[in-house]
Image (cartoon, rainbow, N blue to C red; front, side, top):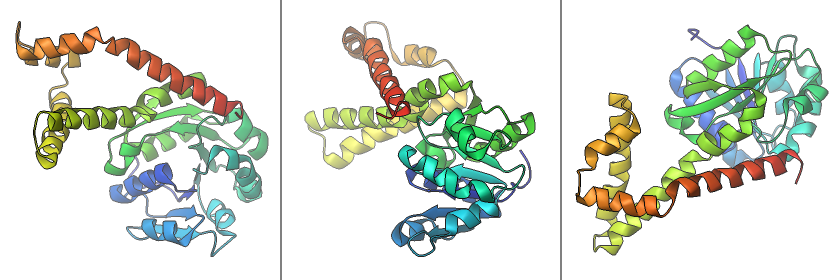
Length: 276
């Protein structure tokens, strides 16, 4: 990872772009970081901590200037807004500027058809734990992106967590696992909390037990680097209470449910890519 990253712009710093901005700012490796948003209220949320945050409602030309002044430009607007934004900034992109897509379902071909074949484009699919430096980000390079371009973008996202390089054909599938994955985990925590409430625990104690159990289990997995199946076996005594509970979960076809859920997410990603 380089000591410092070159000037970076995040155009459309919503929840994902904002998470990356926070991660970059926290790393101290992005001394020139500019983000744009439509409203002053949203821009104010991201201002400070080494971030120049500009509201388009107050400065309509902010996207163009931010793109012109940056070596890496992250596109974080909604997918339907991407083509118009690219047409706006394309004339301002300097030779060698790397364009990074955060937009789900928008292909590299779409980007390259607007910015030109000689502008390196990389698709990125991060997830929201970027804000605490624990993201998983998938990267897929376009036809003009060199090994050096990819290494630079990898270094950028490594300030926010782990990075996986994949062919573009796997980006949507990756989004159904790590991209949507935090929502699955939060849903499981919600349900375990509700189960605790149903057994008579107070709201505060139920939340503490459920949330800290997930946090602790993840920390144990991280610290030991053991296979999750092995850690599960260590908790599951033969003929004990945990074995009985796990049997119920397995009997409910948990594996099939996760396969079905991620298949549904993948189908929706393909619909978005088709403009549906």
